[in-house]
Structure formats: structure tokens, C-alpha cells
Length: 89
Image (tube, rainbow, N blue to C red; front, side):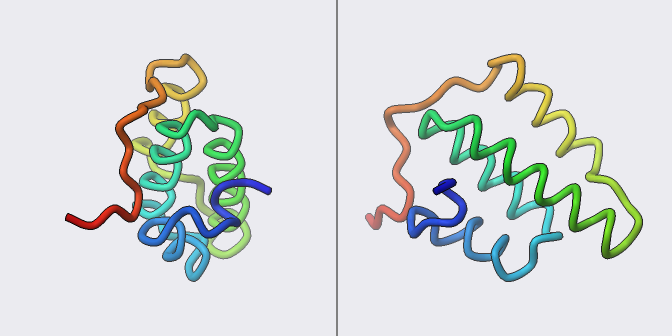
């Protein structure tokens, strides 16, 4: 099961489930997936975003979102062992 379909994400993931065309939520979700070492889930979220934007509005993701995908594919974003999703201070 991709991370964005699980209970791992409270912020960006939940908003992205409510509104699959919300680009900022998708960007945050993609970054979190990569930080957890799951670039595949990040790219799956991007694919879902692209399909929803195209179907609903006849649009493609913004340049910023597309650049994030390029960075993920190039491995420019490294997984982080210090991610604290949902951690409270």
C-alpha cells in the first residue's frame, strides 16, 4: 500500500486525500515519502495529482511540482532518518 493511502500522514496526506488536486499537499506528501525512503509512493502521488488535475480542470501540475518530480527522479532528495511525521513537541 502506498504511504499516501496509509495512516502515516496526517497533514499533507490527509488533505491530499480530501482534495487530490491540492498541489501543495501533494508536494508535502511527495517530500515526506522521499524522506521515508519511498520515492515510488512519491511518484504515485504525482501521477494521481496529474490525472486529477487533467480530468477536473484540463491542467497539468505546476512547474514547481514538476521540478520536484525531476529532483526525485534524479535522486537529488535524499531519504532522511530524522523525519518526524506527526511528532509533537
